[in-house]
Image (cartoon, rainbow, N blue to C red; front, side, top):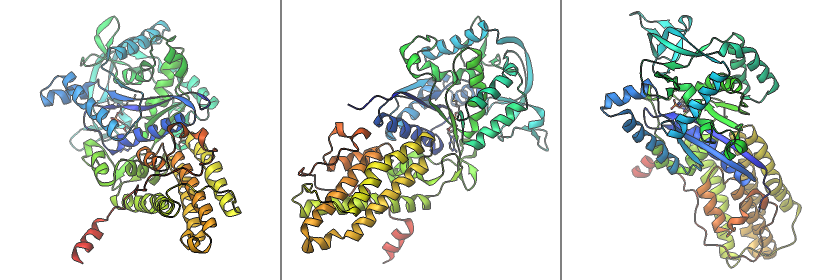
Amino acid sequence: MAENKGAYYITTPIYYVNDKPHLGHTYTTVACDVLARFKRLDGFDVMFLTGTDEHGLKVKQAAEKKGVTPQEHTDFFAKNFRDLAEVMNISNDDFIRTTEERHKAAAQGLWNKLVEKGQIYKDSYSGWYAVRDEAYYSEDELTVTEDGKRIAPSGAECEWMEEESYFFKLSEWTEPLLKFYEDHPDFIMPQSRKNEVISFVKGGLRDLSISRTTFDWGVKVPNDEGHVMYVWIDALTNYITALGFPDENADMFQKFWPANVHMVGKDIIRFHAVYWPAFLMAADIAPPKRVFAHGWWTIEGEKMSKSLGNVISPYDLIEKYGVDASRYFMLREVPFGNDGDFSDEQAVTRINAELANGLGNLAQRTLSMIFKNCDGTIPEVTDFTDADNGLFTMIRDELITHIRRELDVQKFHEALRYFKMAVDAANAYIDEQAPWKLKKEDPERMKVVLYTLAECIRCLGLVIQPFIPETSEKLLGQLKIADDARNFDALPVPLAGGLAIDKPEGIFPRIERKDEEKEGQAA
Ligand code: ME8
């Protein structure tokens, strides 16, 4: 049994149910899944939450357009997100929908606490509102088109709104927030986003309108049913709903709050790193430990988004490359935190080089030699050379330390770079040692080399599980690694000799390029 290292709580944003999920949503969820799986294998008790954000004018309008009720609309789209999570092999422990009763109770519970603490007052509000962003903008943030339309920095069109509203005393939290950022230097990551947030807060915060009267598709404000809560106070609360809030003595709340990481895209950093900790501090609840804002997938430089009509469907990716290769590519290609332009060309190159030729080829070459030349059993050997031991040190002892360190700061691409270096080292070793030559010249040495490689494949298979769970399962299955020997505690325990392995099967097929297919047809 692995040592229990304590609790670890990770969340994705809850996605709007105004359309089907695309590559961008999948990216955030896969990144969180990798962390959740890694932490479980590393001995933590993990809670991993994802879900859907189902209230607001946008949803109501989308439902009206389709001629269905908002609830029917949200039921349909929430299912899309749930289904995709299953297809992408996402290991979430809970899936929250903001239309659930438990969530309404939590949002109202937080509201009541803020009222108790004197943090909410009623006034009236007017300003430029973008329905698409569910946000008000100040005049100086807007551009005015020739025909007088006001456009927000996000590109959304704004309309003038005037309504009675409840306000949260955000202005009182300017200094406490700045102090919080200073005392918790790792709260906002990466650094570029942190600088952006701090300079926004230093500019001074205005009180925030947190209720709406112009529509009713939302959580009702307690004791004033003409108002529904502003979608963001409603949505952000999801992170504590799932832990049993408003019961702060609930076991889950006690165990998992504050969250270790709220993973979000950079578009919603302000809500998570400014409003959310302010709401929580105002309600006497600890803020989360970290908000990590990753970059955007772009297509030819433009953010992938439904409104621009340039979205990549995760199902297309899966069809072309498979689930695991898609997961690997997303996290390997772009330094996590930066924007990245999507191209199939890069996906094929990366997958072929690192999965098919890299890991796949290493496993296939090694396991088929063992199968043919060692009676299908792992050789029993003892005399290791410096070259063998060097590889063990790199892959059995050091690799996990590098990956753990990089994942703790959400550098998925760096973790995978270390993995790739280890695979390359093992492939270089097989070429140098040339076990196919040793077969005649020195069969005893051949066995040692094949054992060394099999042991490296075991370790590589173990550490890569969070990224490519299905393939590593196949690989560890071929090596007959028992289920209880698949967590990271098992890494230092060497592969036993004498065990029979399964007949090896390729784990990563090479992906044919479109141009190769054409050439093939012409030939
Ligand atoms: O903002 N590249 O929901 P949403 C990378 N409901 N990631 C992307 C992306 C892209 N092109 N497009 C979207 C909301 N994402 C709110 C959140 S949380 C309390 C409420 C990902 O459906 C990224 O994680 O618009 C981004 O933050 C999120 O989807 C926005 O999803």
